[in-house]
Image (cartoon, rainbow, N blue to C red; front, top):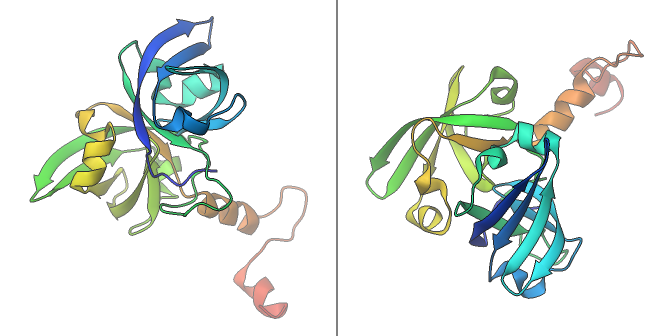
Amino acid sequence: MFTGIIEEVGIVRAVRHGARSAVLQISAQVITADLNIGDSVAVNGVCLTVTQLSPAGFTVDVMPETLSRSNLSVLVSGSRVNLERALPAGGRFGGHIVSGHIDGVGRVKALRRDDNALWYEISAAPELLRYIVEKGSVAVDGISLTVAWVTSSSFAVSVIPHTAAVTVLTERRVGDGVNLECDIIAKYVEKLVAPAKTSQVSLTREFLLENGF
């Protein structure tokens, strides 16, 4: 479990490709202070497991499913990546519930500056936009951001100077792909209220009222 508050920007030192998988060696300083083999780290919002540690950083394996659903497939030696350790039990919940399970890749459609803020309009598939709501939360490359508005083909977020300074978001240009993770609560609610495939019972407003909710 993560919160979308980026702790450090790491640098990819090496990428070793398999037939459909990859191994990433990432240099980092801050998050490695208490990192252990087997720990989870969000890399551009993707939850990955630490397989090796060194004084200079850590190594993670990336399976085919993850490469096909994220922008990790375009990483090369020298790429900068957002990093966040898993949330400790006693930690502050500074962003929103982020699982590190990417729903898909969006594309930067437009950029503009508004005084001290940077606006990003991001296009996304309808199956992702259905879970993105105005003033709700979305994780973009692992960054917890507030949705300003949504259309039938895109949504927009406004980024404050601090977020721009401590993440790789300002390196994104029009046309670049960004990892998107929608609000996990919305997905579970949809699953619960949808008619079950093996039953005629569904969680509706009428059902809840009839049962005292």
